[in-house]
Length: 280
Image 1 (cartoon, rainbow, N blue to C red):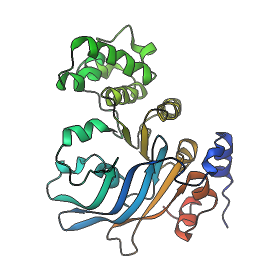
Image 2: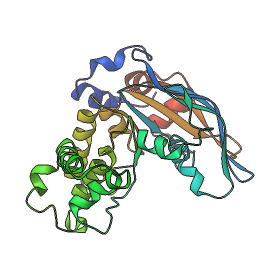
Image 3: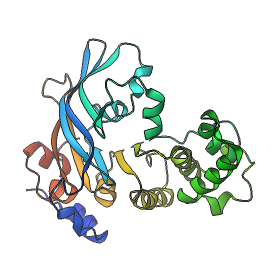
């Protein structure tokens, strides 16, 4: 068996003994049931089923092309922007089916998304955070309070409080990503989706984002797609491993467990092979 010590050391170093608890220790926020996904006639996901616990961090790992980002985008119906894309099955958010809902504005208030690369709007730092609340018609006093609170919760306020009217593009890459998180939480979502949020950042900025995720977990359910297995071990409570099927036709869920169990005691040989670096 290949050496798994780096992953085990990471789990030990972050001091998260609760990862050894049985999955399902907290209520499920999202129930994924028999989910399949198609881009036109091309199937991208088949029969994915697992529950995402509330106010925990769930990581989705697996090789490129196995459907991780596609799965993430189903959770707030981002795929509606792609002609011919459609989902089959069910994704229940607090019992309401995301796949069939017609109230996308409400859904995207509940389920926010942070993308791989920082994406500040071409406006000031303040206006970036205020953008969605203004669209929702919130009063000015409420927006002012929300801007400051969101920047503080995103661990950015102290760094920008004297230049809120400066262009958001003047921030560093790591600051821009924290601004994107502040913009996301400004409308008080229940779930935050993160698609490789640290892949374009240096190690210092990555550490700040990971620390922020751990703090936000107290208020939000977080789902993160990452290629970095050390990151998954550091920040997540639960991990889902995905893989392309043997014919290379679609992605499927291979294993879902507490992060410590999946990395240290994988139940599937394919999971074992991936986390020990034999492929991927």
